[in-house]
Length: 302
Ligand code: CP
Ligand code: NVA
Image (cartoon, rainbow, N blue to C red; front, side):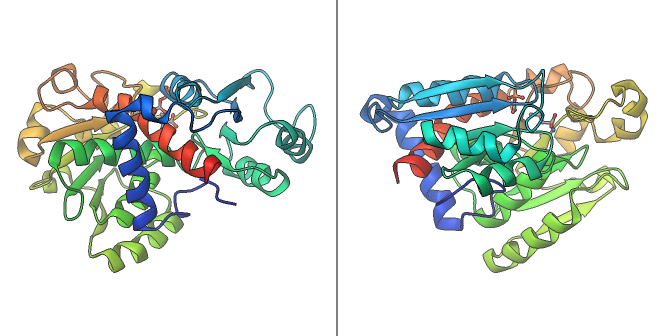
C-alpha cells in the first residue's frame, strides 16, 4: 500500500505521473467525476488550515467521493484513545486518512496501525502535497522543471524540506538562503542530495542573500511556523535580509515568486511583490486542489 508521508515514496516517474494527472484533471475535471465514487476519507487536522482543508474536501467531492472532516484542534490525536485504535477504527470505514499533525510520528503511527493509505497534509517535518502543487505551478509558468533553479529564502522548515525532496526528484536545483542555524533538516537534506546527484541537479544551503542571482523562481514562507509560539516581531531583525522585496527580486532575476501561504505581508514578502506581476501565489493555491485530486486518485483508486 502506498502512503504519502514524506515525499520520498515516489521516484521521478511517480512525481511526473501525479503532476500530469493533476494537469489533466485541471483541464477537464468532469471527466474524473466518478473516479472515487463510493470511496471516502477522514480528513484530520490538529492545526488550522484554509487551503489544505478546503482543497482536500473539494478534491473528494469533485472525484465523486466523500471527505469527512475531523476537527482535532481541541484535542490532539492520541488523547481520547491511542493513535493505533483511532487508525484501526477509521480503517474499517474509510479508504484513506489525511492528517495535518504536530509530529511526523503521529502519521507514521496512523500508517502502522491503520490499513488504508495515509496522506501527510503538513507535519513538523514535511508538507509533501504542497511541494507537488508548487512544482506544478513552476512547470506551468516556466514550461519546464529539469534544470530550473528555485531559491527558497527565510526559515528552513517543513515546506523547505519538501521543496528539497520533490525538487531533487524532479531534477530542479533547489537553493536555500537562510540565516545561520535556520537551515532545513540535515538528515532530509542529505538524503535529498543523494537523489539530486542521480538526477543531475544541485541542492545547497547558504547564508548570504547577495548570492541569490541567476535563479528562475523565488520562494518564501513564514518565519515562524504553526506550533512555534515565538512572536514574529522578535525574529524580524534576523530574517529581514531574507525578505522577498523588489530589490531582492530584481537582483535574483527570478521570473516568478511563490509562497505557500498564509503570508505575513511585509515580513517575509512585501505587498509590492506579492501583488506584483511576477507573483503566482494564487495559481499555486489553486493548484493545491488539482494536486490533491491527483494524489487521492493515485493512492485510493490504484
Ligand atoms: N499552504 C497551506 O498549507 O495553507 P493552509 O495552512 O491554509 O492549509
Ligand atoms: N511552515 C508553515 C507552513 C504553513 C502552510 C507552517 O508549518 O506553519
